[in-house]
Amino acid sequence: MSPWGLLGHERAVRAFQGAHRAGRLGHAYLITGVPGCGRRTFAARMAQALRCAQSERPCLTCRLCRAVDPDAPFWQAAVRRDHPDEVDDPRPPRDRRDAGYVHTAYLDVHVLRRRDGFRDIPIRGIRELAAETYLKPAHGTARVAIIDAAEELSIPAANALLKTLEEPAPHAVIILIAQQSTGVLPTLRSRCHHIALAPVPAALISAHLVGEGGLDPETAEAIAAAARGRAGWAIGMARDVSRWREFADRQATAEAFERATPPERFMAVDELLGRGRPLEQAERAYGWLGHISRAQASELRAAMRAAAGDAPTESRAALRSVVARMLRARAAQVNIQHNVTPKLVFEDLALRPAADG
Image (cartoon, rainbow, N blue to C red; front, side, top):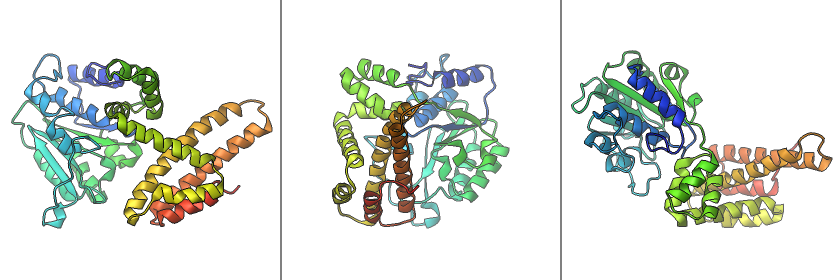
């Protein structure tokens, strides 16, 4: 465990703490990493450390720290990313110009995100958030503004944020959260200190699930392997074992789908997608493509090891086969993004499982 109570990311924590003690903090940060690796929890800990008045910051027990705890009601409502206690977004306001974003604030901590059902974060959300950052803090010594999923900023919103980053308030710290730095405009990236959260080793995740989560070693190892470095994802699965069993069953079905013949795959499409509206089918299709990609990634690792050096022709053919199937799965994902009927995409994938050539 890191000093902040995080699983992994010790180097990032030490770097931020060193800059904080030396008085070399920046006015803007960009936190990147795969979903489930702890980006939002890291942002919450940064907000706590910036505003806590105790000698050991964050203390995690004072009023200012508890307000931004990842399990606090404010944080659950603010970020709303698959938390077990989250609720649906309230109905959008009548003014449709304000409908695309949700701005949540408590004790001088502000969180801006895209409203569910909308494509991006509009410029009005950034203007509202920026105006708040110039106000002096009423609690503590800093005002913290967090933009959740910064890659979802519209172009006008990103340009408006750029002006705020160029002329920051001395008491404000702005934190952007994104999956990849390339998803954020270069002009924004260049004005932020980049904190890239690396995947957590599976052995460390497994040991934590056994020691802190009380899981049996076999289940902990299986969850840690499936997590692929996403400690937050693994901890969430450990808290709800029924959710993990459902995930494991779906993964086993996807692996069987990969091993099946084209006619068997075609017959399984109805079972995979079922019935429903196109948007519901698209969501299920994305989920299944994720499971299929995991199965293919595992097969790819085995094929690469087998095809190393002077491997026989069969091993090299197996490697080419899995790469061709990965390309077809990627093409299926792109087709769904372009609004092709999900069932039609999966039927085509079932009949032509590998890319030509």
